[in-house]
Image (cartoon, rainbow, N blue to C red):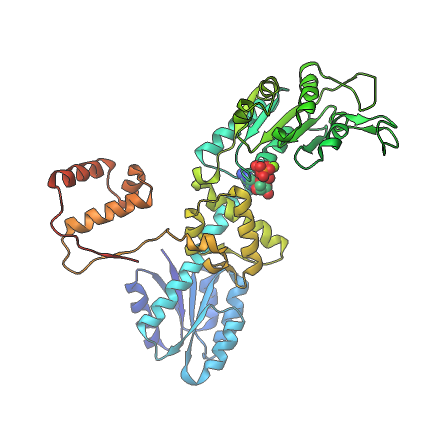
Length: 460
Ligand SMILES: Nc1ncnc2c1ncn2[C@@H]1O[C@H](COP(=O)(O)OP(=O)(O)OP(=O)(O)O)[C@@H](O)[C@H]1O
Ligand SMILES: [Mg+2]
């Protein structure tokens, strides 16, 4: 339960404040001066300190500074009489969360307090997530606790130690390159090199010499002998990214290395041996390329000894908040900003967007938000417009007073089902009912045929 420490030299004020705050369900402690307040904060802790500014002995401003020194994350709200707003402004500059003017209005105080508590809650939640991440970070910084990702990582751990070829398939930005590195680092070849060739980025006529190297004078411009990536990857792993982009003449040569471990340099006659383990990746539908004969079937089978499918982010939305927190921490450090959390509105939008560019798009969105962020919390308007627009997260239903509960119930169930894309068990757990109740209601609605009158509640 949120805990509030009230510091005021006037006993009558303390009693009134305590009554107001307790009515909201908060735990209240109180002290008649700054010194005793600070002692309480130190010994018992608090989420928010509500302090008068003008007090004999330690002033509210001094208490603010001391509180932040004792408990850096505590939020402080100061109370000020009309004539002394300037001091309140100074307090804000020193890190107070808000100020309220006397005579106090209950609603104003409660609403300011709620916001301060919400901020504090976000920060604590964020810290918890980050601590969890620090543990997971040892796993090579691959974030993902969804069922799909956990299964994928288990499979990866299983195949990493073998020398079998692995084909990574999945949409762009899902993490294939990252997983290729993880495969290498978790293999016995980790002391060797991980050599990457992006088959789409290297011009066709240079790709062969890149892969296999060339002898002096092999072609115009081949001044000296050059080692190829297969040479460099001896004892290590060769990662062929965007492998479907490899021209067919090279596909034959690659097949030969995979089958017999043999190759020749461009312009060379000596047969060389390679023991590199090959990991390939593609974001294309590689089976369709085989079907269309632009990718050799025999090569496909050689590469595809083990296939790891990386699911798109929209199929594992549970991973979004962890990934977002992870990137937030990373880019905040990089930009030397002390951003502590993502507002619940912004997180809502992040979680309901479809992420066509997958994790890469999410990462870019967070980097942008960190750069744009002025305070210590990422807000909705710092997210890219398409994400912002997608704030389907928290829809609000409103009903006229006196609407029959049966109609309210139906509307709520139907809208929640729509929100969860028809997932009945998720809907049930959100609404605190059983999935059976949903099935039963749906049957009832069907039996009843048309409901008497549409309550026409407004969504918005
Ligand atoms: N599970 C994850 N945990 C942490 N970071 C991730 C994760 N998945 C992807 N990333 C990050 O997202 C970005 C994109 O990932 P990566 O480059 O591996 O995608 P890809 O599937 O290889 O994309 P492409 O097909 O375009 O080459 C990288 O910066 C990567 O570090
Ligand atoms: Mg990649």
